[in-house]
Image (cartoon, rainbow, N blue to C red):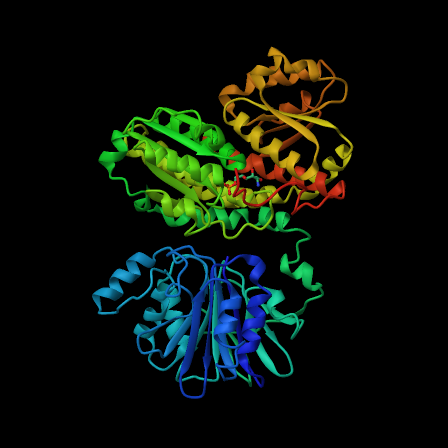
Length: 608
Ligand code: AGP
């Protein structure tokens, strides 16, 4: 996600802003910029690329004198990485500058209304809307203008704002995207995260949702959205700098597991409008959606596992035949693609060589290609005919968690959209499933509360050598991802198996004490999976089962049971995968391994 830094004090602002942004580079970004009040105007410099480019451009801030400013590193969500789309964004008069982390979900509507009033936009971003909306409402009182703007904005935001006629002030506000306020003997700060200001101060205020703050040399004043003053207590940060980069988490993987509720919400919410799914970014008319005769999903690793879930959900809801291929196989099997085939390429990085080659193979055979990608402007995003972005934010840990969860969430939206357009779903079922989707982030949040219980259970299996994950239908898809998570970060051999297939050979490997993780979230297949659990138990297996919360009788069959809250059977992957990510994490941690950077692995496999 983006990084924000702001400063007002006795020292030159630009070097402090640039240094603070450098401490936020770990968050992932594609462009950077700063704005500083130079005594007469708000000077702005911003550029695509690494922070180093901006540092060279401004001679590490020397060319931008002034004691008050804001800075930003951008992780693109709306609009490709470019100088123009980089933050800060200013109004035409250059009297207001804004930096933003988050997603303005209703930016298109706000932008159209402002354009009708004659406002001219220069960027593709959602953030620029804020600069013009502040201009529209500003009558001399920054807090009042900010209140009015935020009352019209839907979505998530952490904002840093400057007003030219309040040159010795910085304003900030937050909702769902983190923002802190710090102060030292010589200045005051805003930042997205502690690392940006830790060298200056360990005394910070954590802003809460829908709070506004005004900073000057003399004061720090907090307000609610009604403009009423708020009293807040500062806290002291005790982290060391490395812990701080991970937001206080010991590893990026755990931090990203905990970011899943927000990542899923950011991916789903902007695309559920009223009682419908809005997916204009597909670039497919209803007619084109109705004419799709087949879907090929192509990906690697966890993205492939998301695709397997996609098969069950798209076929189950939209009744469209779906074939799922490993990209490394697809590209060499001389695939048969008709003109009315939709190829979906799923990729977190958007740079996986096999997936990119498969995309080119598909396009070369006349198929329309949709990308489901996390990195805006990446190769797969640029070469696909259309892109459905996952808004998971940057994923640092090699083992994917939040990006995978957002990939399956994007596939749910696609399946519901296709099912509705093709008349394959009852309107009341459709509405109920939209509500089930909206509930997922909170249910994931609830599952994160099982952390200690899962860590305790994981510690019993640190020395285990073989693990089997079994399931039927979507439970099989979940098994695939859970098994890979364990393998790649704990180095324990594990296999995912269709539960009904075990008896055709592999069950010979089950012996006394073999750990089997049985997924049983598919109500229509529950009795069959119970039989498979009995099957492996009779051969000595120790079975951890994962099932829906109303199946307490599972405790009479399995040795250890984890429960997930009720949701639609097509969506259980989003919930079941969370405890299994934690299980893999704690096994790796217990074995003293490098959770975030497992041996032999790269975050993006850009070679064949
Ligand atoms: C998953 O934890 C792995 N990091 C790996 O399987 C990954 O999913 C695969 O390499 C695909 O990467 P992509 O999503 O960036 O294309």
